[in-house]
Image: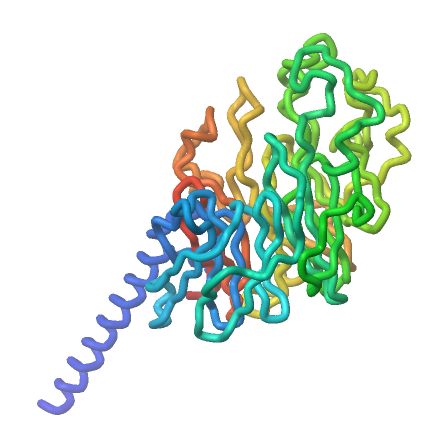
Length: 422
């Protein structure tokens, strides 16, 4: 009888410990505060991470971040979880960066600064030291849209996106009623994607290396190996109502233009600065700087159309495709997109501040997308009037070797780790 009672007590104790462990795991998942679909768990991989923007994860699990706030000597950070508990316990600053532009391919980490692209050899279990190898020099400087996007294909090409230094190539930038310049001289060195050899040092920036044009600002850039396709998410223009109040109301500006997802082929022209994309009409329309009134298409029907559209001013910052078996089948083959959040929707509440999942069916995006994380989990508010009031803003995305989705947050200096079934 005593033995039987002891067995009962032991089983009860184990059950209590299991329940406690399950409760602790649930509490850890909830502690990150992100709003996620059922059975997904978000934990904090790193805090006080110096405003990380673009991130990448190496085969050994080391997370690399291009920082918006370095230590005045270095702008890149390597973060490692040495004990396997899902939290970075070792970090090192190194190298030169510019907050955006970071990608890993074939054991090399490629990073962007404002004027150069460099790469660092990655050795398993070791963090990079010393200067990187310069791959591209002489990227054009500018005062606006200094962020870069980087992508590498499977054939040894490096793609660099360079944003336009203006809103719509006006004669007087962001001045009410100022007409646009035609042809726009900025397109020679800005507003597109340039292609270089991934393994050739010291390549000078050349106009002849331009791969695609007519892209206002697109540093959410990646290469989809499965489709053998360069793809990016573009930030559309601002201030239709304040610059052209006779043609556009504040309500028009809240929904125009759409943020768009682009399949980028060599020679494509997506129409900036002459045109913008109206998601409701699914058409490129003429910008008011070039005679548009919200209805005219003019020459815009000759430009390449996007493959998907999202609400205006959400500000896409990063895009990554997911094909790891760690997530359920419905998340296989599509793209996660990080939207940093808007500033240009006043007097309405600001929008974005979330990570969405865009399904792909037969190699094409479906008509629907879902909010995967946020926005309240990032902003901490029901209504956001200013992006500065948001507690957190998603900025970068990366997939770990075991299938975790990493999300960087530059506003809160945090890197999140999202897993399924924990």
